[in-house]
Image (tube, rainbow, N blue to C red; front, side, top):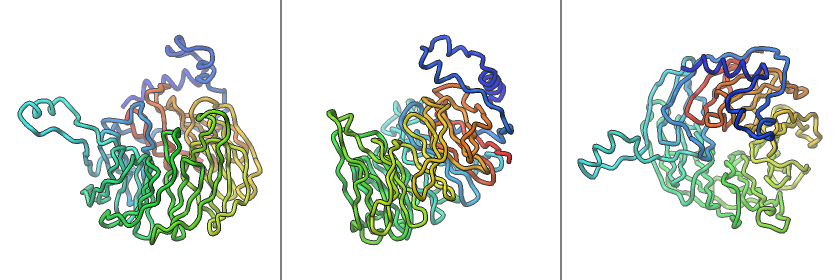
Length: 408
């Protein structure tokens, strides 16, 4: 537990004082690190904190907690998967998927002083059918019993699994960095079908987490398309170009859709890195409207509001029915915000320095703040929290898991 240093760092940030790291920063970095003054409407509280031994360090990762079946499930890149009690953070069970060399006596001695070879869990956790599903950078997909942590199956797929799977109609949908989307049997892991999309010579590190709804598997591609395949057969229902490459260089021509499609009311909402936000009809693939926003963070729909965090960490609220902007907030630019989550009448984002920020969902004004990472980039918040019973659950790069109350 490190509450005293956290409270000290939080007090320094709220009072506008400089920290030691500020002495070595350039003017641009200092401007990013300097938090805006706010009039706090409430004070969030840390309910509990848990160290899960390892985190994700500075590797690209979209690992985030998953909440369900009366437990909170978390994982680290090394290979640890944990089931925690959401009320107090106590461990229900723990499984370890790091590997060790067992070829002889010297390897035994080495293992005593090693955490093993990392499993490289990166794809995020998905809960369905009382099972925890996740993938790794080495192309393995796992299924664990949610109650005991016992491994039900493990299969290999072609390509890195950098996004959480989707599960529906007894099919596990897994997207990979090789541009291949796999449909696996949820009970056995057997491959049922495969869909392949084009991957340009240059693309972003991340990939789109698939969605599964209405009998279809929906995914964004590195070539800027939105694609729907039938869950039962893997047959392509339709493909719709969302963003088209333009520009003189390969860097200019990056059009990746790296966000999870959001399905709401028969409409798919998606956004590309190159600058296209679109609403697409689920059944036909017809584009209903487009707007110019760019992002690699997931979109969030709540009621008639569509929330966007763009590549510069500006936050927007739009009317999901027509894409008309309702408000924008740019006071946290450059802080590499996560996507938003909705908590009571606010939306919450995390940043790379380990702060949580609460925004009024009606006008975007900043209404509360909490430092859980010590104002330290090495322990920042890299994925959005999950919400359950007015409590936020999140983890930091160093592997600290927090439960934070969100008072009304």
